[in-house]
Image 1 (cartoon, rainbow, N blue to C red):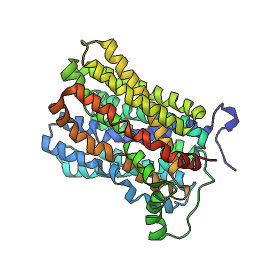
Image 2 (tube, rainbow, N blue to C red):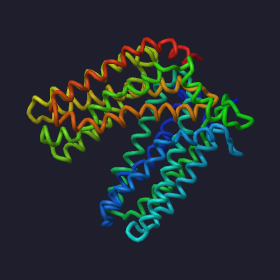
Image 3 (cartoon, rainbow, N blue to C red):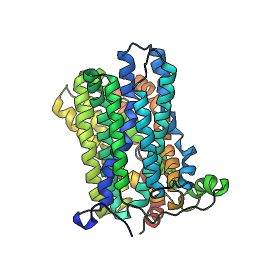
Length: 415
């Protein structure tokens, strides 16, 4: 029997969905603290640009987290349930690492600062592994759309707190105090984890073996249960978004003529709110349409809204027009993300969901990794108008793959 701090019947929705907000927040919080916020701190402290550039390598754990995910699938720590125990452990480690990080001198001990930043990124990526697995295990099929949307909202809020808000705090109260406050916030997330619902349906492994725990998850993904067509969908479903979004900031500043502050307001604040709204709207629609029809419908919307930037290229500078284009593009992107993440969750076998979600999320980044470096060359050679037309056409082929995975989506999302 599940135990809850508050009876689930008190809420008009699943209590598990409610907890997706703090879990998303906890997942999004550490990202900027070793990324953009750290860059701001280093810049203010006068650290040389070469060191700042090299410190961007601390983000590597996010790309290779599937390597140690099998161990988090197998090992159960001696408290709480398997997923919640790992979430709590990583959050405590993150809080301690961030607190120690706040005491370091960027100019005096850059190597130690980089090492601890790498440790923070490792525990952050590890937290992502197990939170993704908890979400996959705990949310029922009809809860996934709203659950993912709720998680995305919390995640984005966490990024705002550790990004823009932390930068303002660093300017006002100092970076040491800022990172200490972030450490306390992360520790508070551990209390939420301790009170979160149990997931008693988790399979518990008995004996670790390289075959069962390291190779079986890969083999299962490549099996007929998921298959090559599904993997191609995972790689290419968001490729149009990645293509168009790679140079949006540059396009709005250099081509349209907006200032950096105006772009920050339009593309970050307005875009962020639109993404959250799109994720929620998409989650609600998914409950009615089902995952397959949602993937088709939202995929078409993602492709069409990319053409908004093509249209914007032929207009005079206008907040109303640019704002409308950005709102529509982010609404469609948020809806597509809700369906896409729900699809990946459906592909995961609960026996090793931590490993498989980490693998599939890594696979999904391949298109973005290889497309982004090409975008500048395309704009330089063909111009902005052709660039956004191409972003529309690269979004289309994956839609023709969706019928080939319809049965897999329906099968894997039953129950």
